[in-house]
Length: 238
Figure (cartoon, rainbow, N blue to C red):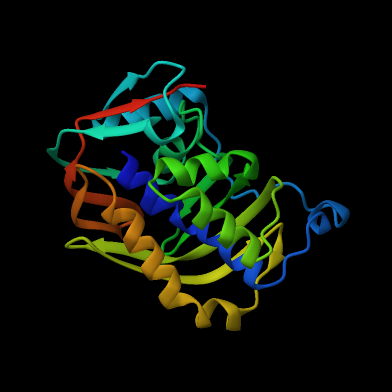
């Protein structure tokens, strides 16, 4: 599940990086009245999320509350898996996650007929550091990046549209449109950082224990997956 979520949400993390490169000004989105995510017309319930997450077959295990942040999300085992998600199911998978340090909420994901994917939602910057730490990134490195790119430590909406896939474990992402705080990021900034985006996405996917993808792509209005998934996902719950 984590590998699949990473593919869907890696662009969300990239948004924070690009927002810094573009000189995003803290508080500007609120002043402009754009502190809510873009509505993509996908509505779900917590029950929808539970059903979608069950489809992957990964078993959730609760860790003790005092488990250190860096151990708060553990993947174990490996098994073959093949499934697909439509827009509602994919939205269900990425929403209502029980993990304490999951920083994304109010998410929507829409798969379009031309093969593009649109995602919108909110990111909680107050726990993004712990999220990164749980993925294996050093705190000093994350702090350095936040400082270097003037990334604001505040909740903000995002929107991204593009294409992406994983074929034989190789990640390919093309961001067509991106907004941070509902403020469009210039296309020149996106194009000049596409190699960094793909390198970062590949690194995150490579870190996922038990996850491998012969194919994770968009076909006939659905996200399709064929590969391996971890058997268990052990987390500290909220």
